[in-house]
Image (cartoon, rainbow, N blue to C red):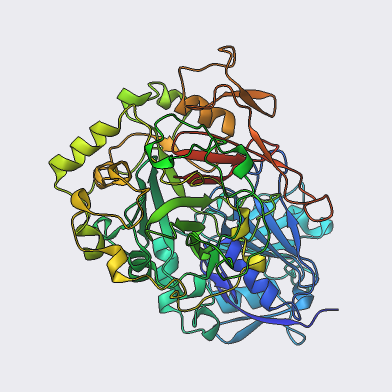
Length: 564
């Protein structure tokens, strides 16, 4: 039998270590740290539709059940169903221990007066509720008639006994049956106000500010909004603009730095002799260079003539950023949805992204309202860090650059520049606490405005000069979220295509998805990370259009989004 846990009760906030609103990723990491006290953990989820039901962590040896809202993956309900395995206290007084039972009289004495509870005659249960706390007491059948039509509290039965609680719920909201996750801003405030050592020192998200939302746009980049910050304090990660120094200044050192050593998708690349003058779109297969490989050594390949590209892994944000080894500028942005049943589950916290749909001139979906797409936040202006600001051309020049790219493929500068890299998994990655392993020279970064910058790598040209107009003026349009299936996503991105148009499709749960731009004659790429013993979850598929790639599971849900 596991050691009895000693936990304090804070209604509407937490039960000891388990704080409402905490992410599934953080809770599982906590349970791993406490394996000696919590030896058995069962994970329950819907394999067919992981967003249809709560994700449940059952601590069988400790009598605790944790329920997580499936979209945000944040703790919404804590259930105790075996008080004999716990020592529970409230404001220093014992609620349940080897010396005290959680009786109705004890609960009423500690928590104080409250409204009459609810009696369920079919289950013989009486629920006594307080704000953020509910206690459930079984009522013997011989005493049921006393409370079916009476407002009296079952403090004591006629035979002199008192009910003993069988269940306890800690929740946020009006009632435990309709519990919702604590707002992230409230969670951050509760953690800051907590005096408990277990809530300090970086246990929750390693001391990082909680990520509230990520607004992403194809061919531009992403804007990260953190809880407790103003809309003007968004962190920008811009394709072909952001440097490692920018991320170190805005996000701190990454949890890991991974140097790419080989390109296992090179066989699919449409390579020409002079890549920088390549104008024809090489399609999705010709740009996904990162698939495969499991050697995650944090070093450059020996004998390499060209500097290796490298990833900054921010596991607690659910984001990877790939930098070009020559120019040291952002080449790809990878966002993870942390869906249970995937090979990378629990490697990354879920990234709360909203991917913008293209503008009306590029295939906007007029029926987005009917599709039930979530709205994106109203426009708000914000200023990039000074390091990035010096590379941004004037707004008029930004617009001219953007218009010049319409209908034209941007030069990717190398035969392998975009796609998914499962090598970024943390399980075998070498950590780098300083984030300075790459040794970027100021001469490579330069100080000229981006419009007139001379890149050290001749493969870069002005088609790499991404503006920020798409992220700095976010319109209240509708976007793509982690709970959508690949079939809907591809239809929204390419509404002119249909399953009967002759384009290749990706089949997910019997639904066909129109293929993306430049992929009409190529089927989805199949990605299998090892044998069934190494990867019991089976293969996934890669599908996308110019500027974005999606990795989808067999159930059709997207687990990774890659912007390039």
